[in-house]
Length: 290
Image 1 (tube, rainbow, N blue to C red):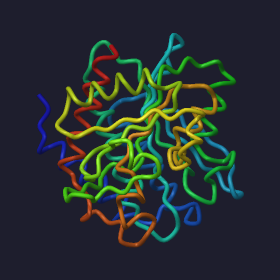
Image 2 (spheres, one colour):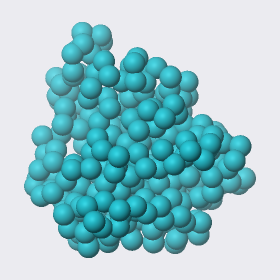
Image 3 (spheres, one colour):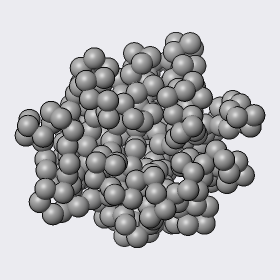
């Protein structure tokens, strides 16, 4: 049985370190970005995971993804979140909330036997100016995975998972979703897939609905997500582009959170009880994969 109070406290500690102690973790503050990388690495090491530091050069500096776990040649899943921010924001929701859930899901998964076929990845350089370039950490990983011939059963991308609203009509929606019956109250976690990833989306949605008390709404978008450009705005799209199944889990970012990419994206705006439920739901999904 998972102690929800302890889990909540751990989530708060992760977000506090990343968004308060470190703050702006942009590529323009390389020492702070490296400190965020080191934090993720150390937390994985504390859990006795095998670690790979996948480094590359961007803007004349070395940056790196942190990979925890062993890639099973027969196939593996990925749970990932980027730990960098845009310049000028403490990035509590974007993306310390997701890193916190990543670390705690990895902690819970460590107790499972046999070992689940998962790796847990902290991605670097998701944000501008690297965004939409070959220097996104997730693009580097996805491209190298394809070159190696990795069998990735599914990639789950955590992208802003901490901001929730309970007032009616608090969830703006892009055209045409507002006319298709999707929720208009911002209290749910959104699951976003391309059409190829619909099997992964269906399995994840069912697991979250069974494994936690958090409203869930999923959508599979054809043509690689290009019909709704907002659906491509994170690390998962780089896996779509390499032919892998991937799903983004998100609080819908700027569509819901008015603090997006700003100085007010702070810890106090987050709903940690909802983050606890999401972590439990992911843990349930990971257990099912054994």
